[in-house]
Amino acid sequence: MHTPAINLETEQQLFFHNYARLPLDIAYAKGSFLYTSGGDRYLDMIAGIGVNAIGYGDQRLEHAITEQAAKYIHVSNLFMQKPQFDLAATLLEISGMSKVFFCNSGTEAIEAAIKLARRFAARNGDTSKTQVLSLTNCFHGRTYGALSLTAKPKYVGGFEPLVPETGMIDFNNIEDLERKVSSRTAAVFVEFVQGEGGIHKVSEAFIARLKELAAEHDFLIVADEIQAGCGRTGSFFSYMPFDIQPDLVCVAKPLGGGLPLGAIIGTEKVAEVFTPGSHGTTFGGNPVACAAGLAMIEAIKADKLMENAIETGAMMRAAFEKMAEKHAQILEIRQYGLMIGITVNREAKYYVDEALKRNVLVNATSQNVIRLLPPLSISKEEAQLCLDTLDAIFSEEKQAQG
Image (cartoon, rainbow, N blue to C red; front, side, top):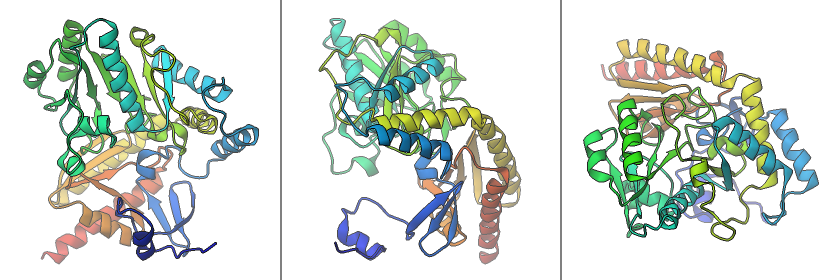
């Protein structure tokens, strides 16, 4: 078999041009660091875009994967499988909800929730109750239903028409919420902390009014916890500090411990909506991924990683606030656990590129936001390395500008 060179030129030859990949050939990873085939080490403040909650090389995770893989890797959802049962029971215990459906990814979880919401309305005899709404500046995924709830021009362009009966409410705008929802609304999807949108938190007043309107019009509230869930904000789900119980919760990214796994979790209200054959998946709830997910959750609890997210996140916020006093480039700091957004006065890609030169991996979103999603297991010393790197970049930029 021909072994291709691993570089950007070959990447362009082999793949559809979906990704602007970094010029790094990753050989292995450990803790909070990635190592290239050339032996260079990079501090990873992206964590697989929020996936690798417990970092790299955790032996508990590796043991769970290898132990289950040795038994069987796939048998399909025609059979009952202990890893699925164990993980489902754990998610229900954490959430206090009633039912779980496993899928492969976040966007599939959103699709399943859209279908469930519309079927819930139809089963109650209201065939006109088909409207599904989300909030502006959100990101719910790239398949057609999820994309229709995302509807950012850079993701949507050329893929229209989108799924009908979808729309958006202005983020945190209670008057627009009151204008948009009605007896035709089947569901409203909410990221309680918007990730791709630049780390923005929904307001308590908005959620309180949403609850009232949901009771009035009998629509479902769906919490998208795909990026903010599994402990990243300091609670297992980001909706938990609010006075609300969503009807559905969508979860993915870290759920499979790095393997593809998503889920929707539902309350008793929606427990009987899906029936055999109404929705399904070939690979969803893969037993190896479920075993990994259970090990990941147990590690988060055992290592007190939600507490670490709160403490280390607060330490980083305080450092960024001090940084902002001397660097005019920093406009705003938004931090919820280890979900951090730094708004800057130019395209954030500049800082991503400069940090890469210094062997620190950060991310950019919403044009001018530096996004940090490190492993929840990151140490304060590792976090300080990121802080020192960004501080140096801001200082050198200021000096270069005179």
